[in-house]
Length: 485
Ligand code: PNW
Image (spheres, rainbow, N blue to C red):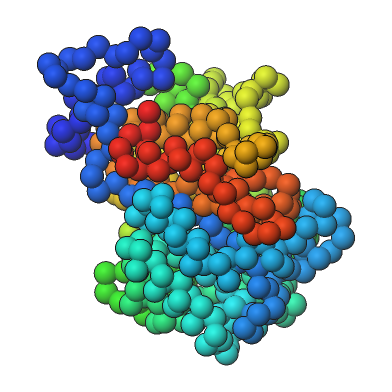
């Protein structure tokens, strides 16, 4: 990494960028005539984007041949989602996509990360392709192309066709992994002429552990540990088979990656022993998912701690799971602080103080250092060469003022602090290539329904009117100046 630092013209700013959050007075200017821009500016090619997902924004669940996903079923089951909310209408982006692309354009982003709905494209999960769905995504891609916004498409953001849950028990069966590969082939053949960047799956734990262990998310099952570990295995297998399918069927030059909410291990203190401890924890804790994908194997520590409940798998499956990727995306929300310790693992994860700050979602603890440590860990531990933050953002208790504005200064605080740490990563030469803010607009926040708002555009869900929040103005400014401060 060292040699990259000297190549970057802002590399000399390293020391001050690191101290930026801690200093009370402006950093000393070491070069005559240097301005803030010399210290804080992101490089030219850095990709700025926003993210959404199909079930959270599209609505139109019964239109143009779409069939139900497990999230339609789950959300329509009483007691599963706050206030009995569901994604039937959501942010109505299926009909308002042109307006939503204009929102992106007015922010000045270069990229839009959205997801393709499997239950639209292949309504029964396998077999027949629904041309009306293909046509919808083509319209969206046309609109993005006209606005010169690069599409980054996620193949699976949790909306599993209900038919696969009914036929195979969903992710309990490797048949669902194979069905996903067949869907990936269709997506590759139909869209890779205009989509260069694909993500296979989004956030393994949210559709495996949360769907089949705690039951907090669709399909709301509670399996014993052996069943859960097998579900996890079928999920990483689906990713691996989809990578192979994309490689086999997509246009040359297609970039294939993943968007994963790895547990982000932050050394509580930045000293060599704690950094080493955080690296070890990062590998261990993510063993069922990210580590398996990047190493093509399950760690012994994972298998032995699972014991008789460990997943069953073949060598061929593991090599598919470890298929090389062009880039890795990390969804960065909350930190896991790690300390070196005299314990068998060499680290501990201390109990979180009750005073730890968080945003409006109960799980959303604030630790902006994740935006530095996520790329650094990926590059240092696994030698990943192209890294994106594929989601970062927060829920806030947004209030419309009498004059129709939303002053979400807490969200700006959250974003700015993460971006300062992302900048530190770039300034040190870690290969962080881009940043996607979650989310372009308020949407269906899964089990929290419409009760939690993550957008930088406010959506009035009665009228579907979009109102830019103050954070939208902030993000526009960040992108225009390439500076978060
Ligand atoms: C992500 N956690 O989910 C998803 O990719 C989005 O669809 C979602 O809207 C967004 O983050 C905000 O929640 C997460 O408990 C859900 O740590 C839960 C967690 C993290 C991410």
